Length: 239
Image 1 (cartoon, helix red, strand yellow):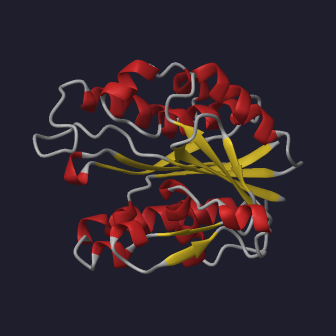
Image 2: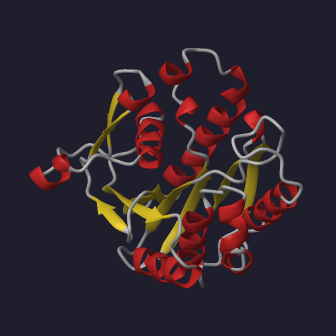
């Protein structure tokens, strides 16, 4: 059963080495992510599952010990998901960027000695399949926590990666309201086609959360809501 969840953005610029110290505008997001992870730790879960967008054709599990890096962003920084060493199969499959950022956040906050695993979710996964995957995750342990990675729209300003789209602010506000209220039904109702047009990579991961949270009776708090670089970044905690 799901006992807590944290929702965080996943830009590699959260990692100071990637940002080369030049992204102070993300200090607030980093602090909020740390606070959200504190909520997860306080829930004393028996298992933590990290969920984030990935370039897979189907949901792809990443066992504890899976490794990732930010070498593709020009820095020699490696991370590992959880404390246990990976088996050979895990060692051959590198974490996608979203889960690598999650692993960095967990290392940075000194995450407790709890089993950790990852799930990479295709950004194109239909909402109903996202919810089914979430329900499956919630049944993995008597006390499951989720760390859900994903960015909102990338179309908030003229200089945004997706240029300015007048629909972006409204879409992001809809997501923010749902996260603040721990409203899984509102997350399930997000328009997948619109999310794709607005380059909102977190849509599928949020809908996995919605499926996992069904019947859990959690309450929510929105800890951060801003759009540096024209990309919507949201941090929330459900407990």
